[in-house]
Amino acid sequence: QKEVEQNSGPLSVPEGAIASLNCTYSDRGSQSFFWYRQYSGKSPELIMFIYSNGDKEDGRFTAQLNKASQYVSLLIRDSQPSDSATYLCAVNRWDDSWGKFQFGAGTQVVVTP
Amino acid sequence: NAGVTQTPKFQVLKTGQSMTLQCAQDMNHNSMYWYRQDPGMGLRLIYYSASEGTTDKGEVPNGYNVSRLNKREFSLRLESAAPSQTSVYFCASYRANTEAFFGQGTRLTVV
Figure 1 (cartoon, rainbow over the protein chains, first blue to last red):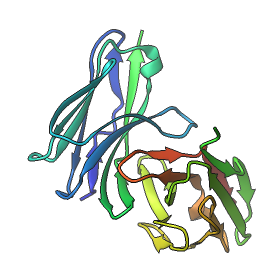
Figure 2 (cartoon, one colour):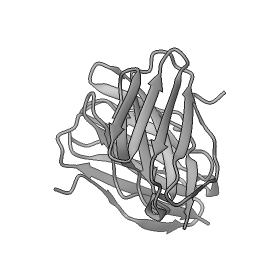
Figure 3 (tube, rainbow over the protein chains, first blue to last red):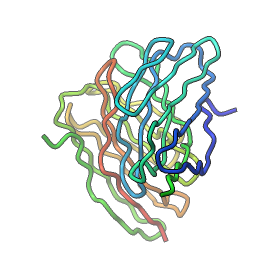
């Protein structure tokens, strides 16, 4: 079992609709949770992170965390063609000053006009 | 404000050749990482350095060596390249309780 699981997709979303991405993780000691966006041929870039149970909103993006269920999700509202990318879920636990990131394989999102 | 800089961006090697991937960060981060990314497999940790002077193996260290030259620089060396090492390599740095910042990646092909 992988430590971080994501549906690979592709997730096809009409322009203007909501894209819902899911991620589950196996390490109950995970302390922080990240969503990265990666365009084809580019490096991952952070969209948002969440540490506490509940929802966190940033513009059109909402991250949701449920530590009891070991589940984190990302909602993209009013999806735009520019949102077409692969979205990587990452979880982290830190020991002293460094953090061990575990990444999922990513979900490809395709926003269709 | 360069962030994390990797060189080279592209490289083609013949089986058995060696090379070093260079990485430097200017954010004064303690922790640095090398990942490889293969289709459908996400980012897999090769080696990491929690702080200057320390390095440790990650998930897929075989065939690689690293050097944490100073706080800024963390290099990855392939001593005898194999076709299985064809991949995209990313260097990243991290400050405690914040995000990981990635370099622009190195696309390596071993023929």
